[in-house]
Length: 206
Image 1: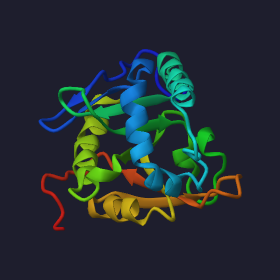
Image 2 (image 1 turned 120 degrees about the horizontal axis):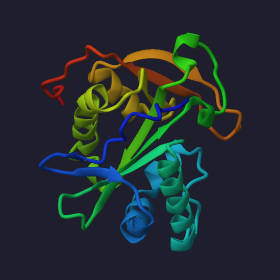
Image 3 (image 1 turned 180 degrees about the horizontal axis):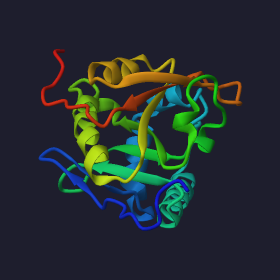
Image 4 (image 1 turned 90 degrees about the horizontal axis):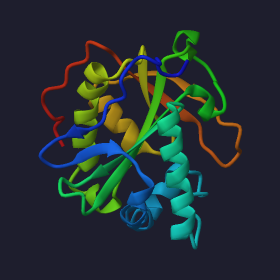
């Protein structure tokens, strides 16, 4: 089982800067704006496949409807990152089981079992300069440690996403193993373990 049937799924994570809550189909317009404005970064992480040139609002709606249903069915969880007033989408967080990653290259089978979450995220491209991704990850670490019922949480990024990899290492996450997707257009993904006793109370020096 990906997530225990009797465990609650967190409804929200709030800070003074952003709100993390389940992604809904009704977020389509704000989400689409964030996706299109961040296309260059998202193409980097998708092997140049998403969002495609000419990606439409209707296609985005279909994606959001699928994510919302999966969240409801507890087979995967997708969260939007909004500003506190919920007038701008700042990014997205994906929490999925291993089989979504389509392959295992090397590493310990201990982390392939049930109740292991593989987490990826992105923030609006215009917010990379002020390091919103760092602050988001800093908030996600204790959230996963205290509010979720997963046995293991691994943050993943494709090898080409060096900004994410540096961020994981700066935050004290431990490199665990690599994942080799079957699709030839995707780079090797690296998995970093969030250890239960990790405490990060200060931001890394920029």
